[in-house]
Length: 143
Length: 143
Length: 143
Image (tube, rainbow over all chains, first blue to last red; front, side, top):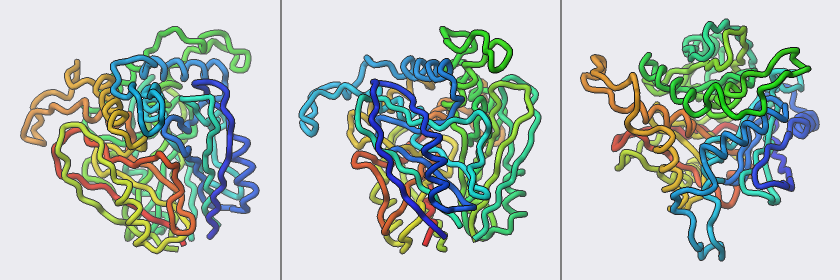
């Protein structure tokens, strides 16, 4: 059995955005040599997410809009004060909330060396506190 | 190690509904011959979900009601216009949003050939854009 | 390949709270002897969740606050009536709804015997219907 952990760095450019990482996942699985198994993709941050949806700009904009509505930037938050551990004001409680709603990972089966996915499924890294340098992990496990 | 990918087709009958697929998952795991490992269930669509909750009609109705409230059918959506790629009007932005909130998959351990689940846990295929023919995948991985 | 299923009991003390279980997960992985593989943590209940966020009391309070806002305790719920199967009134529809939003599990890669996690990632058992005795499962799978 192979277990291959690949760290991927990404520079996000907006406060909130969804970035299509489907090709990176497919290439990583192909390079792993795993023919039958599982791949799952996990963010390493608590103000971001990994999610799957359809790769249409309209749909992406509406997902962002929903998260902004359900977890608004300004609210009656406790996490909006000076944080000694960070040396600055905490202003990203909404980013943590959006992360909970979006989820931090997704998985797909690998069969005969290819991902088993629906034709419209697109894998996204979701930034909720950008712009920042971010890392996510693609873990391929199998034979 | 075995890695068995099983595709399941399902005909949904309502615009939004949750369909109990627990028995299908259990039967698929039993048929796989895997004694110790993992099973996870993944939808192949971006306007549906896989989720776990208690198998009571009242609870199911309230889950549907919450998703309808948090991602309403009509809103200030960008994804409500003629889509050349589909040859029709896009009217399902709320379906994509509900899919993000519900999640696309769940997993359970397999121990001595049986799923490790709580007594009230019921696995659902969640339709958010029906009625449609749908597919989900049950992937059993282990020894 | 090893597949080790560990059940953990926990006594929650509030109606809704998030409990840091990161150390329990790390200790369980270390004790498993698995060097390369996956660990995932799954709740066994439908009115609780497993989620990852930053281990700051302010952030935790705001996550609880968001879930309470999106799935309020009192609503136009069907699941608020006498339940013969339970011998009491159902009053926890909001708990089931919060469970859907939070999700029931998370996974991390194991590499050289250690979890691959971001520095701020904290694993939580999320109680939505306490106080209760609860169980979650830590499943370690790999070589």
